Image 1 (cartoon, rainbow, N blue to C red):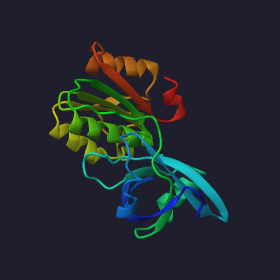
Image 2 (image 1 turned 60 degrees about the vertical axis):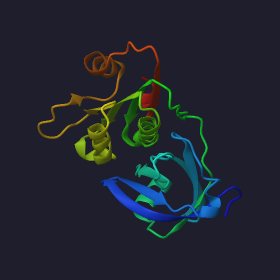
Image 3 (image 1 turned 180 degrees about the vertical axis):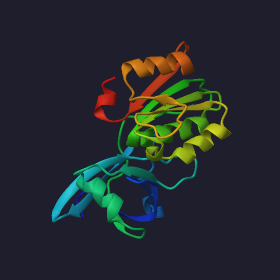
Length: 226
């Protein structure tokens, strides 16, 4: 095992879309302190694939305040060694080498806060954003979360059932989907998240005149350039 990594067993694997899985880990109680984390942080994995060590980092989609086990989501990328391995080869009960959580793309919740969080995500970029949303909704009852989530089509929306359940449960959470290539009679927003589509969505759905607001963006490189 590489230095700095610990052996953590897989508790559950769930097929989220045709090319993405969520993987839940059973962190041993003796290591619980080392794997405490903040919403938005990531884990680094090491695996021997085709005889070579491969390391990749994946954000956690679970929230540290809701009692969930640590969970990541991985979308299979063409030619991606680790993403393909995690989507096709691992199984429940397997043990993976994982470093403790890291990262500064985090939410620091405060029970007295009254913030407006704008979360812009694309594809598997939803993973840290849903963690941030769940944490804010749990810990900051006076704050509002607005998620704008872009995907190829409706079948490629990761965590759609969970996101829709949050929207149904919390009046202070709103989700807006936009699809690049929708199927059938899609009535929502269309197109990739460009400056133009973000401006349109902000004008039609959100409004941006808030005294306290924080913005989080996570997605593919072209979206991050917006």
